[in-house]
Length: 220
Length: 130
Image (tube, rainbow over all chains, first blue to last red; front, side):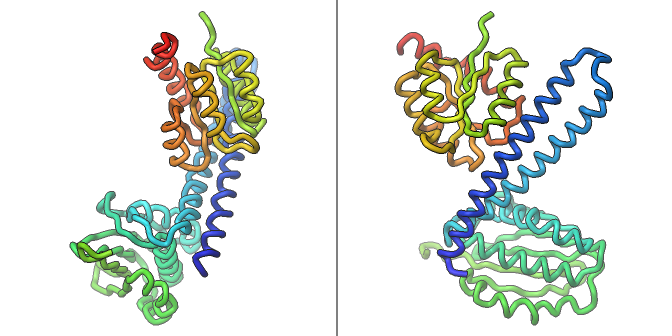
């Protein structure tokens, strides 16, 4: 997809998420008002008071969940704005996990972000980074058995950033085949990111490693 | 004791009416406006203590309304409401807003910010003409 088209898609998605937040705000204030009125009612004058308050609390919890999802979706949409910006890797992993969690859950796979360094950042294209990570997660989720997990981790060296998608639990035999099936399709994106992918089959350290070189000091 | 007067400005009618009722239940004198133009008209008739102002509205934007309020009624505290992101809030605070809240808001957080706004030294200074 070209940058202009991506920016358009991002702009429309960002606008829609703003509308969703307005809707959630109305639900929250309306349920909050009901909650206030029931709380203020005289003892015994409102039947099933506790049940109503509990249900209104559930509504509030779901509004907060919706806000979290739309905030991440909004950030994802804005990641299409600029092809090269400073990317906080921990935030990026958190966003990818939230956006992909449902897809992984459908296959019985738990998805977590475990960034060791919350401040780790690099100049890169956040949209394409997410595209690569989401593609790997999707492929891995199909290769793992229900009950397995994928943990997104980070590491940094002086000249590179590493994102490790660690596979935990029941992997189907031959899961490493994604190096042949998935990686070639990502070649163009990986070239733009100047990143490389590799499969790690080391016992207790199985997964996919994405390495992104950092510019040498003094170079853009 | 004099009630704190709050004007809620947002084009989402259901949002402002529900929030205004919640504020009334908490002892505020709450009024609503659904556009920047309507808000400025109400402020001109009787300036409130606090304005809760949505940033993104059809017609006059929240940013324009904020500038007009800070120019004509510097004693009025403006708390911004935005659903878009923190950048709106940072810009708004640079332009004179007291604080910014992301929508949907948490009523307890709003209460704290309004209490803090009413206690702020800036207001006292404005009233003295400093």
